[in-house]
Image (cartoon, rainbow, N blue to C red; front, top):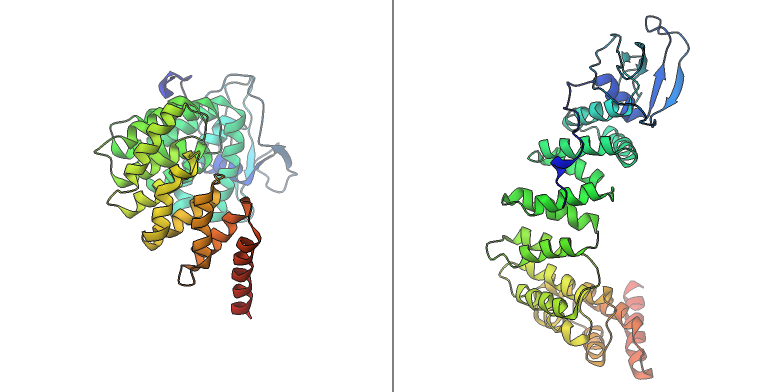
Length: 357
């Protein structure tokens, strides 16, 4: 597995570049031939550009000429801030370069979060996602920034939302490295990223299973490890191993772990016998477990007579939880029902109409 640090070396983060930032979040650069006259005509230029030449990090300050050393001559450009982010008519100088824009955008994020500028944050994520998807060097910079800010929960949350949308081996490899860390928070972050990426491969499965078998793992690690298990073809032997461990976790002292295990069992189960822990939970578990079990069964494709009868009993249970009865009725749609069984569903639906009236 390739390490994050084996990637082409990303450029170090420079100082805050408000101008580039605003250009990035707004989505366009507005170039002017003369920055001393704000009334001169401005032209628009798309933010995404081809990276055919080497890039060198540059520093931009308000009303200062910026030299891009990858070009033969110095260029002075002016950027108008987005109306939603800054006062009308404020201008800054910035180099017209995607990597510099990405670096600047990353440095603006703390300010956007501090100001609770949700509209600005949304624009930031949209822009950086587009840039990172189209350029490996920018993706490297995004991963480096994420690593540097991994202990800042607010920033980590926003960057995670970008990374989970980038189905790239570099992102998956980085997530796997974190999930293998001995640091609890890094491990949790890696598992969260793997769960959201949903890339099906055996290495990710093994990492998730290792966490599930860790007797020292806390409930949050266990829950996230279950979610990180990819939906993929596995051997019958490994499937039995997974179900055995999940059944053990369905008896865990923490209710949140028990509930999560029910969803994981439903995802792995191939027959109704393997759904027994869910039927038990639906009948005698806590409220959360009953709802989780019913929801997990509804998402399953498994069919069988015992499962069908258990679902019919839940539908007929007038004292049962409304959510459980509704999901049990929905689950029965995948079964072949006799006329008497169909009448149970009809009676249930009629009672809903009567209560609504």
